[in-house]
Image (cartoon, rainbow, N blue to C red; front, side):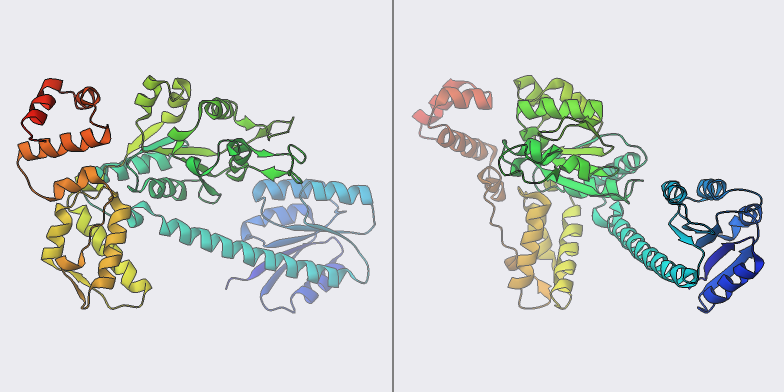
Length: 447
C-alpha cells in the first residue's frame, strides 16, 4: 500500500514539527514540512494526499494557496489551521474548497488526527467504488457480453465502438429478445460516462398517466399523494445515460414533451416552475419500424429525427448462423457454473436441431431452452431429445416441418384466414395476392 503523503504548511517551525511528530505516529503517513506557500506549491508533483495549511503565511494567503492547489488537482483535501477564529473567513475558505477549518489551540492535534481519519475512510470508500466501477466496465466490455462472430455481429461491434467515442444519440432496432438493452449497456460502460448512472426505462411498463412524472419527477404538492419531491429518471441519469426501451409505444402527447426536453436540455418537474438542466446521453430502442410509424401518423417526424442519431440494427438470431451454437455453449456453461453442476457438452445431433430452429423469441428464448436442456439431461451430454421447443409464435413454428412451396402457401393462407375471420378481401390485401386465388383454393378445398 502506498504511503499517505501529508504536507504541513506552517511558518512557525516549532509548531510545524510538533504536528509532523504527531501525524508520523502512524507509520502509513509520510509527512513533509514547508514554511511558505510557494515551497508547498513547488512540491505538488510529489502527489500529496492531504495538505494542512496555515492561513497566515508570509508570502501568500490561504485563499491563494487553495486556488493554486485546486487548479493543480481539485481532489486534494486541504485543512486550514488558523491562529485566530474568524467565522466569515472560515465560511469563505470552505466555499473555496477547503475540507475543514481549525483554530490553533491545545486540541488542534486531535482534531487534525480525527479529520485525517475521516479523509482516509472517505478515500478508501472512493477507491472501493472506483474498483467496483472498473469491474462493471470489464463486465460490460462489449466483446465479452455480446457473443458471436457472424458478419452482422462484427458490424455491431464496429458501431458500438464508434458510439462510445462520442455523445451521439443511439437508436437500437431489433425484434424482442435480441439484446437491445445489452448493446445499450455496452455503449454506456465503455464510454466516458461509465462512472455515472445507466438508467433504463421501459416505456410500456409505465401507465400513460404516470409517464411524465416518472420521466421528469414532480414537486411536493403537485398532486394528491405528492408528499415529497421526487427526482425523475432524466435527472437520475445526469452525466450518465438514459435508456428508453420500446420508445415507439409512447403516446403523441408525451412525444411532444420529450422532444422539447431533448431540444432544450432542460426539464420541468410536474408542478414545478423552475427549469432543471440535465446532461444525459440518450439511447432508445424499439422493435417497431419508426420510419413507417411516422408515415402512419403514430410517431412525430421531428422526434424521429431527433432520436435517430446512430442507428444500430440487431439481427434476429435465426439470421446469425453459427452464433446460435456459440451462444448455446455460453448459456450452458453459465448455467452449470451458477448451479454447481459439472460441465456439459452439446452433442452434434442437438447442435443440428438448434441450427434448424427459427428462434422467434431470439436470444432470450435460446437462453431458456439451453437452461431447460441442462435440467433435462441425465448425463454431462446434451442430446437432441433434451432440446425442447415451446414457441408461442405460430407464424414461425410451421417452418420446423419441411414442406413444399405449395404446402407452405396453404399453411400461410389458412393462418391468415383464421386470423381475419375468413375475410378474403382483407387477407388478399395483407398478402398482396389476388382474391380470386384464395376463392379458387377454397372452392377446391385446398385450404
